[in-house]
Structures are given as structure tokens and as C-alpha cells.
Image (cartoon, rainbow, N blue to C red; front, side, top):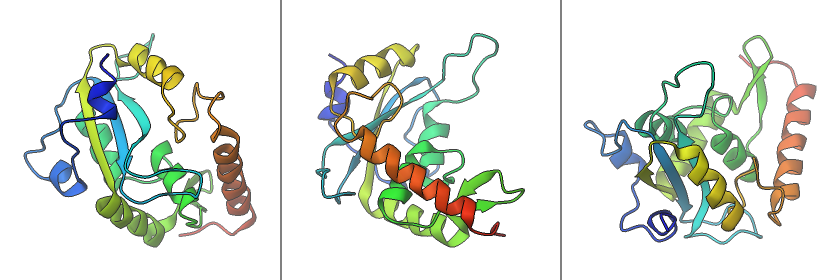
Length: 181
């Protein structure tokens, strides 16, 4: 099964390697997997596959512009408003989620996102496999593997309700705080 390439990859890539130019990450459709060197929560073991994502979402009405390179690089240096992985990691690390801009978007603010990016550079490692229609493989992986950081399609996971609760609490606290600049 293709999952072996994500569960026990030949190589894991660091932020420094992924963000270098040229990037080793292909500009292709596929599935990526995240491993972490430090535990994020007492109920989660480190140094194993904890999350999978896809690049090139299935869209019936338009063509996705995402690819593995764009998604992986964005997770390493983007913000929580556009990366569910970053939102999850920041919540697990206890960073303060804030409303920003018009107040509809939520991120960890400039300092919090920088802290998260540094934590990811130190602890997050990624691998990937190219796949022309990655949504089928993603669903298969989530149903068959223990991927506690995936929420979508993953209600059966033992950590699902705890993670959903942590994220909801962070959002609620953010709504109670003033909008951050």
C-alpha cells in the first residue's frame, strides 16, 4: 500500500530543506504526511505520522491551483487562518488565537505565527507521494490509520473529540478578545 511511503518514509524533510530554492517538493498533485519530533500532547506519541493532507482538492466547478510544493511550504510558513494543520498545532502548543483584520480571520498573530513557524522548523518533518487524484488515497489513509491530527472524515479517532474541543475553546477565547492588529 502507498501508505508505507508516508508511515515509514525513506526520508523526512525539514522546513529548511522544503523552503530552499529549488525546493525538493514537486509541483504536482499528491498526499503529504507530517511527523513530529516532539510530542504535541500527553496523549500523542512523537516521531510518527500524525497528519495527512492533500494538494489538489477535488473541485467539481473549477481547477485547483494547489500542488504539493505550495501546500507543504504554506504549512511551514503560512498562518492558522489558511492552514488547519497550523491551527491545530498552535492550539495544541497553547498559542493564543486572535481575530485579525476585519475580525473574521483567526491567526496566532505575528508573534504567535513566528513562534509556531520556529517550532515547526525545529520539530515538524514532512514526506509526500505524488498522486493524480489524492482525495481517494487521503480518505483511505484516514479510515485505516491512526491520524489524530486529522479532523475531517476522522470522527472514529480516539483523539478527535479532544482536538475538536481544544480548537473550539481557542476560537471562543479569540471571539472574546479585541481584534488584533
